[in-house]
Structure formats: structure tokens, C-alpha cells
Image 1 (cartoon, rainbow, N blue to C red):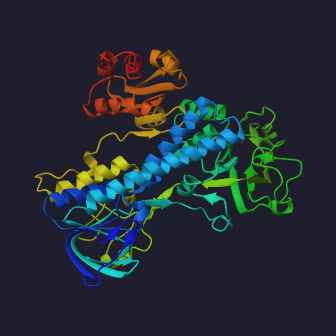
Image 2 (image 1 turned 90 degrees about the vertical axis):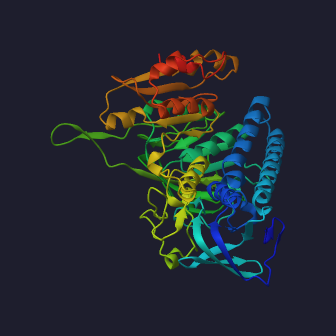
Image 3 (image 1 turned 180 degrees about the horizontal axis):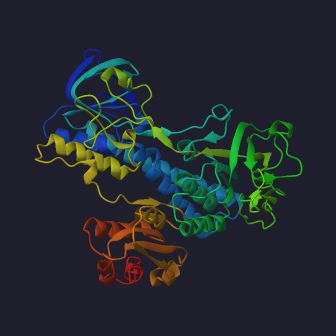
Length: 538
């Protein structure tokens, strides 16, 4: 049963109050799976979703699936040479956006009807907020609906974290990932604030479409949580695509440029230039994100070459002077300020749990210091009979973790003798869909060393894998960490074509406590990327 449809919102005036067995706030993966399971068990369920554009959750509408659709289209454009001229780039981008919209619209409709067509489920479109421990008010287009439920499940996901930069909220052309994936026209120049994996996926994608991409990172180290050799290989791949990096870069202000683009005032520590000046003293609309930094000098900050070999910054070391004990001492880092003018800016500085407006205090639901809903190992909040699933509870922000959260909750509702808990969860893998996908599971070398483990490192260049050569995708490396005496697989990092598939084999072996020799000796079909595990774990 549905109170709303994708194209029309209607709240029956004769039913302003609903009493139900379960209320799920948010239409994400964990929530929608739980709703279907509760319905099949004969329980009455209300699902509240703030926007008709979000039926099905973040993944299918503004996350994993639309971004992967665009990434595949961008890769095709690069392979076909469609990114070589302005005309072909625009045509390829327009076709990619059209296909992305088709896929998300289809999936959104299917997800909506999968729930709304069930007699036990009522879907209400509107923003929900708590009015008491078991009561919620949902603000719909035609007035509020009060819902009282025995059990309530918060599944509101996460929202982009926006840094406090003057002009960031008011300047046209500044986007989060949601907006950037729905542009009608491809930006010729793109600045990305943030070099986490979301930012890097977009950098790789837009570079493949033919956009000139510059990534600004606040600190000096690229992918600081990854092993240095892996991070260097990922960076080299992106630089080969034409992506430029600027480290130690602090965006001070954002404003419209005279040419209709976006102007950023950027300060870079450790960089010097002949005439450092405030951005507001530079004529609006001059320069661009690839050329304004030409001639700068730096210690660790670098930018990478684009298709124009002269279009990059020149770097040198900061002067040093001896300290009192005779050891070299670096001078205080200089700071240069300059303007970047670009067509679009992507703010990719992470995501934060989406709790705004829920009035959680009315139900006695507490938050963590990081702003997530506080939960225990069973995903129970600080209020009785209220759970939190998915990104909103501060766990790993993956769709498959939201599904895992559903399993934790359902195990408590289905009469299991021993509920499944978060602590039972093993070895969460991840994949980043760059031009060469990067996937990992378990510990990397940096983490194994910090933990004081006795380990050996296994390495294999992807160029040594026959299938990679056949696919004309020989770039990348494979790396694994194995405990020395036991042969236990501690982790794996795969920067390789099809790594997003192969990593699941490694995870399964780890889950089963299979030693590295199992993958070394396993019989795989040939030619495949998976058979590289024979050599990697040899």
C-alpha cells in the first residue's frame, strides 16, 4: 500500500495517524531489505523517505550505480578516442548522462514498487522527525502524518561534508558528487577539493571524458592510509590520465569568475612564487586551473603534467640551515596564494551521517562525538526498540555494509538463539573504480608493521598476468601480506583490471581461515585475472 507515488504525493486526509509494527526512516539498502522481510513475516511496515528522487537509497540514485555507469561511459569514450575534441567530448558526455539517468530512473521505479505494491507496506514521502520514543511526524506535501510504531529503524544514510569556505554555498558551479553527476554540459576544467577515494574516482572519470582535472589536497601525503608503493602507483596512473595534483593546498575563498566560471583563492604551504597576491587583486576570469600555478616552486607540493608538457609547475627544495647541533633544519615553510579559475568545482571532503532535522533527542537517541547515531554491537541505539542501519551509524560507508546491518538487526527479530553482531563481521573489502580499479581487504603493510606482526610481503606486477596483457590492461600491481609462521593471509591490495571481482576470492579465503597456500595451489580457469593469485601467493 502506498501513500505516495513517484510522480504524485498524496496523504489521505481521513488517516492523519498511523499505528504500525515497524517504521523505517529512509529507503536505503538496509532499510528496504528489512521492510520486505518484515512484510513477508506478516508485520505492518511504514517506510518514510524524504524525497521521491531517493527511492531505493543513495547507491542506486546518487552513489555507486550512477557513478559506475558514468565511469564505464568515460572509459569507453577514452578507448574510442571520443575525448579528443570538444565536439566529441560533449557528445560522449551527453550520451553518458542520458544513460545514467535511464538506469537510475529504472532502478528507482523498481525499488519503489518492490515495497509500495505490498499490502503490508506503506511508503510515505516526506521528512520525518521524532516527537517521542515511539512516535514520529512525517511532513508531506499535503500535511503532516503522525506515525506510532513498536519498533523504529533509522536508515537515513550520509550527506556530503561541506567545509567552511567563504562562498562555497553561494557560488554557482560548486557541486557535491550528486550535482556533478547530473550536469547537462561537461565542464572543460574541473577542480576537486579533496583527494580521498570519492574525489579520485571523479578525477579519473572526468579525465577520461577529456576534462582538465586539478585535485587540491589539504596535506602533503597522497593517500596516507595506503602503503607508499601502492599510493605512488595509483598517483602515477592518475597523472598518466592527465590529472594534476596540488598538495598542502588550502582553499581560502570561492567566488564567481567574470567568464561565468568559478574562482578559487588557494594558499599553498611550502610554495613560493615571485609575486604572491590575494585572489581578489587578480582580475576575475584570468588564467585557469592548469596555468595559474606555472612558475611556482615547492618542497613537497607537486603537480602533474597534462597533455601539454609545458603546462605544469616547476618545483625546488626549500633552503635549509644548520641547527644548533649541526643537523640540517628546514626553514619555516613559505606560503603562496594564487587564483584558480575553472568551470566547475567538486567538493569531495567526505560524508557525514544524515541526522539533521530528525530531533533524535525527543526519542532519547544519542550521537557519537563524530555525529553518528550511537549504537552497540547489535546496532541498538540508546533508546529502546530503536536501531540505526547503514551510514548513519558511523560504520564503513558501503552499500554492502548497510545490507550487513540488516542481517544484524533481522537476527534479533527472527527469534535466533544467538543474534549476529557487528563483531561477527569479517574482513570488509573495498574497491575504488579508477581507470585501473584498486581493491583491498584486511591489513596493508603499514598496518601490519604498526601492529607488530611478523609478516612477509608478496608482490606481483600486473604486467606478468597473461589475461591483463590480452586485455591490453597491464598497468598496476598486486600486493599481499602473509603472516610468516602461520601462512595466514593478513591482507591484499590489488591495483589491477578486474580487481573488484578478484578481491572477493581473497576475502573468502580469509573468512575461511585458509592459508596463503590455498590460493597458491588453487586451480583457476585460464586465462583469467583470478589465476594471478597462484603467482601472488607463491
